[in-house]
Length: 634
Image 1 (cartoon, helix red, strand yellow):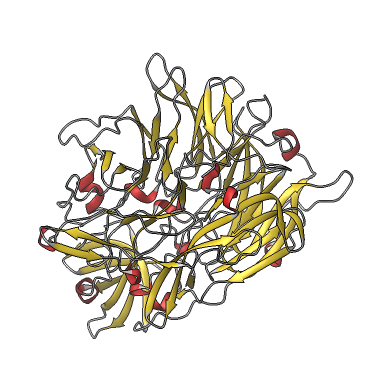
Image 2 (tube, rainbow, N blue to C red):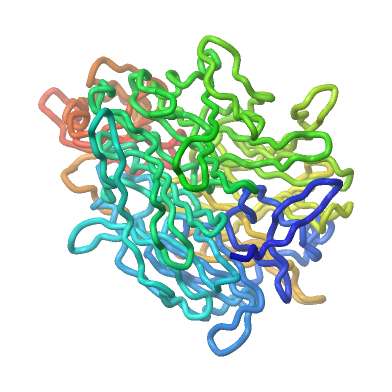
């Protein structure tokens, strides 16, 4: 299969980046390239100077049928709908696919694939999402085949099911018969575990590498953890034939998990698995049994950066944290998933080796050598290039090369965009250049991308999308000048009313435009024609608003609060109005629809009040740190 991406050279650095089409730049995969750099180095229009000016703003807002969790993709000079257009492809949680004119915002084609999974059918009524779960991951486009690959979730007469699909870019029709996701793997000595669609979630962006489509699978809210296990699966592009091998990430037998709790998922807040020139695939895993005792190379590589071979036959390398207080056992016990963030591959230069950067909930960014990630060193220091605290990261890094030919890493943990120089001397590592805070909410972190005209001075812009932090439920687009860290633009770009699920949104920059997909809308930003008036930001009143959330099944009451004490299956929580309420979650724990409570962190409990005044929970889920994102009590 031909690789449609072009190579971009900068100061001896070779990067596979967004493709140059006949009339401009294509964006064919998550974060622009298979290394997930987040860098679009072919932007000849948008610069710090004109983005800061009065002519930059909202050109069009397109109404869609549901929430968008996936990153938009872009193909230029595409024959479609009786003409030739630059096309933005957007997928929604209603299992709909849109082809939209990238200049005018006109919807050229749309197609609904099947009814999505309703929240009421998710394990424990998982609320880490909107009311529907359909297409949650970013598809991937194979330009040479004229195809877009995606995975959709749906509720069918036979039960929940995932389908892998290959759609025509020109018609949105299936080019081959869709394939249902199935898999099996060995557990323990002689056990067989089969893929369970009802307890699996496909959130991480798809990857195409050397003719194979890869997808990572996770869980819903850590519920059904006795059933749900993480997977990396693959299919041949063009035929959708599954690979002969698959990677079942937790292969322990049931006797090996004291709490009957498995997972070791791939979710990465939507960040995609990455690939290098050899075809090997890199990703980060999340938590396993909350006893903190089930980590076992390589049968259960929880809380780890993992490299697997292209055929998924074996683990090529891995890294598992061993910091005091940040080791794999502690991460499992406190539900501080390393896998809340993605792994970015940094190509080799004349002065630095090929590297990998990744951070998770604990906020520690690890810089690893790609040829040997560092393994597991219990009782000793992490065998990595360096460690840097960036703040809690439900996020993923970006990278670019500046006009001074210095390679830079952009992190977005906590509420800050931080830029780090990658330096070879006096020792290999990162040196922070600046930190710029933005207004963002929900879980810590957010996503960025970078645009520039190669390494030309005065052309680089760092773009970021905030998460909602107050009652407006607004998300904002930020533009930052990397030469000084100044915010040169900020404005409302969309809304996100389903605040119990993070807005893991990525700004897409190409051909003088910025595309932001959010709740039921696509906003297109750019420069207005000379002399024309421009609206600097989206007006919230003009955006779709969510209907009130439906009551969860089996749960007449619902309460959110911060855990103040825990004793067995009993908790005391402090509610938003300062009351202390007892929660008995023993039934939810037995039914595997309870998360691990951590003192100081908020939970949402659903159930029935008993005569002793305690809420007897049939479900207990995580809640966001800020009460502004909590669901209403009832």
